[in-house]
Figure 1 (tube, rainbow, N blue to C red):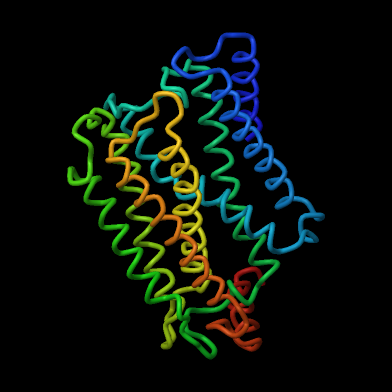
Figure 2: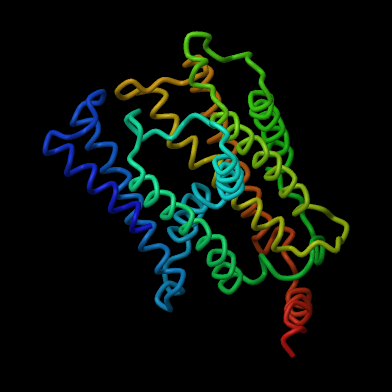
Length: 310
C-alpha cells in the first residue's frame, strides 16, 4: 500500500507546483488526494497491526471497523482485478484507465497503483480472517448450524435489500439502460459494467451468507466461509458507496455519473444501508447470544480443523 501512498503524495506535490490536471482545480485535487493519502496511510498501519503482536492488543471496535472498510474496499475487488487483467492481456478495450481527475494515467503510475491495490488486497485476504479467527474463535470455528441458533432480526431485511440491490446492479451489468442518463451513456463502458456486475454479485453473496449463518439445521459447511464472505460483502457495499455518494452529490471537477443524479444518490444510499444491515446480521450471528457455537462445539471444530497437523 506504500506504493499507492507514494503516488498520491507525488500527485499532491505536482499540483502544488502547478502541474496538476487542467480540468480539476488545484484545491479540489489536493483535497481529494489528501483524503486518499490518509486512507492509504491507515491501510499501512492496519496491515502492520495484523502481522505484529501489538495488533492483538488493539481495542476491538476500531480494529473491526478499519478491517471492515479496508477489506471491503480491496478484497472483493480481487475477482474484478483478475477478469480485468485477462481482458487487458487479450486486447479487449474496457474503457476506464483514468486518474481521479479524468486524464490518462502514465504507465509507471498505473503499475505502482495496481501493485499497491493487488498486494494489499491479497494481504488482507490472507491476514484478516486468520487474525479474526485467532482473536474471536467462536465466530469462525465449527460448522454452520452447530449449537443453539437464534435467528437474527436483521436477516429478512438484509436478504430483501441485497436481492434488490444485487439484481439492479446485474441488470445494468448485462446491458440494462433504465435509470441511465442518455447524455452520459458514453461513461457506461465495459469497465463500469464489470464493476456493477461485481457489486451485484457481492450483494447476493452477502444475502446468502447471512441466511446460511442463521440456519437452524446443521450443515457441513465450515462456519468461517459464510462469516468471512458476509463480512467482506457488507464492507464492500458500505465502503465503495460511502466513497461514491459524496462524489455523486458534490460532483468535483468534471465528475459525472452514467446514472441520473437522483438514481446514483439513491443507489449509493441504499448500498450503504444494505452494508450496515449485513454487518449487523453478521455481528449478531457472531455474538455469544446468536447462532454462535457452544464451547463444546468450538472445541470439536478446533480439533477437526487441526487434525491434519497431528
